[in-house]
Length: 361
Image 1 (tube, helix red, strand yellow):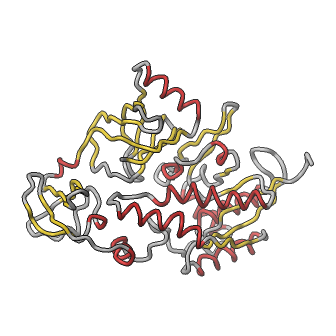
Image 2 (spheres, one colour):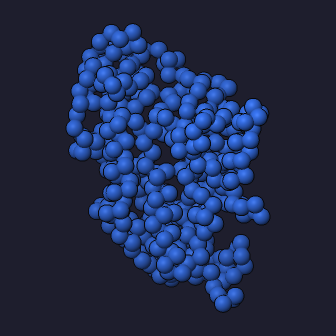
Image 3 (cartoon, one colour):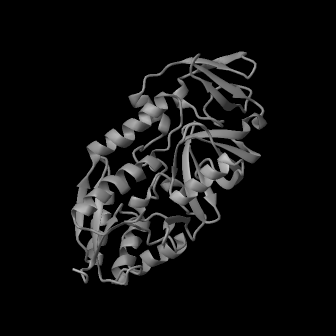
């Protein structure tokens, strides 16, 4: 049994990144980290009813690579765990990040469970991120291509999940990945680039209109002056400029008063800048880092991190401190940050390493 081949399940989306990830593993022939022969299996996760083209491309890629191909029907679970969560959070008036939850629940939850049932050793995906395995555990790092880095979306993962995870394209740039796809003649270069929310085909507001009832209310300025009417607080997000529907703009969404169903707006963009936030449900990827922060909070030796409050946000210096709630922390930025938005993820870095993250509350 010691010489048994390593079996790796690759999450195949029909896109460039996951296709090249599978190709790299197949081409390697042996697991670069463990030096054993590997068997690669491609799995397409069916999460909606309009993914037939993507499934077709994924199947074509596995034929070219000469690896087995399976389809995992997760439509019911995806609706329950991701779409319903998204709608519930929007109805509460916050701006959720379904991709983060999908990674935890679907890709590194249900898919990993399926991989284990197939006696696989690892799950590989096309994420742009890197893993460093040490004696003290698994460290999650930014990708080589900083513009494509997707570590932000992986903050909910834990040591048990990461122990069985591979990111084959993490050490490549997107251009290098596209060149490899072209060289290998993989039929994926003309595929549409993935959209921000995979289960929404038009606009977020069109999607919400289909499932959530409108709850119109008043639009007010910061002094409480009524300026107009809004369609429902779930149609707006902090910092939004377009779609407010008032003359004499530009206006920006500053706040959402759920109790009184008021949309608070401002003409002064500087009003959107804040220095502090509270994040809940914090997950620390590496347990040692969690202990460091806990100790520093108790001794008042506050920890400095670089934090991101959305995917395309430029990480900013902040001090992180523990509150009385063990999974809630306060972030105080050195410089004010624009449009801190409840429901979005705040993630913490030190150098190249992703320490963890939480949900902005």
